[in-house]
Length: 164
Length: 325
Image (cartoon, rainbow over all chains, first blue to last red):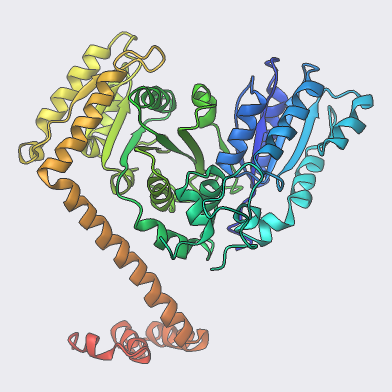
């Protein structure tokens, strides 16, 4: 199982700047580290990022942003994730994030210390060591519990994992 | 229905996260996937599964997006499975089909899933068919499967789709010569994409000629149409969608859909029995016994037939093999 359980990560470029060289380099490095990287392209809205993360069932979301709009976009991404009951996905950010914003970014639940000069190995290692262990050890995971924004057809919370 | 596990109930009720997680389980070959797939089977069989294949750069992703948009305009719910190659060196993959499908974002009646081929040749991943099964059960009217950019031998899509679209582009005259052997034979519909470029008519004419040379063509009741499209501008896309629907209709009325379903069920069951048999053998015959028998065959102390019979006897299969004598 360990071998077949590949990490799936979303590399997204939110906001209106089109400078995606960095995002592409990171996508490539994660691929070379054996991960499956879903690359969305530029000009992603928070809705698009969260929707892609849900459909692709990724373990981690990496956002690259250079436009300075991070304090507008990141909270929206986190809010939408929460609204959709996605609480087990690792969220990371890089690009141009001023030092003074980092505590606030971290407060949102985003690790934002991956700016210019970060060694690739630091990003790869961080993904590997911080992907939610619950995602890896409980294949049915939190999805089988009642999610915040998900109507349960059974009409309420279900007890724990689906019994198999 | 009463026996469905909660996550399956969620999928059936349209919960996209449950669907996405089930797809992950299937992709990973997780033990949890098996009972789920068994439950999903009863809910499938309604979707029209359409495969898109063709050379890298032919514009498959853009065309799939345009087709999905047209299907949406006709009121259908659409799922897309886009397969990209896994690096044979690192095991990683970059799945970039969503870049071209951006305009479908935000539509709750579209579900897009990227898959890495994970070492499978043939243009699909090993689990693509089961992923299609999940999407079918989730109630999508059309499930589009986009293969890895394919050459001559990537014809696995035939086993996964009901209608196969082969996408080519103008200005690849020699390329058509190259594809005629493998991919030409699997097309139910041909597309000459990027038809706004010069040479589209010529490419279509060449294809028509190649199709007319197909010996088996007379036996087939379906006449393979050639549709010129420009996926970027949308030209020809409504006609293509009409042709897809016509092919489905043809499969239904000719009885070929049922025949296809039968073939598929048989091959799936045989594959599963094969797996079960191997598992049983592995559980019954220890690695030392295996190794011993292999060594005996190599040294010609016994022969492979007798050795196989010995193993078959250990799992109680001797009478079935008796006829070999």
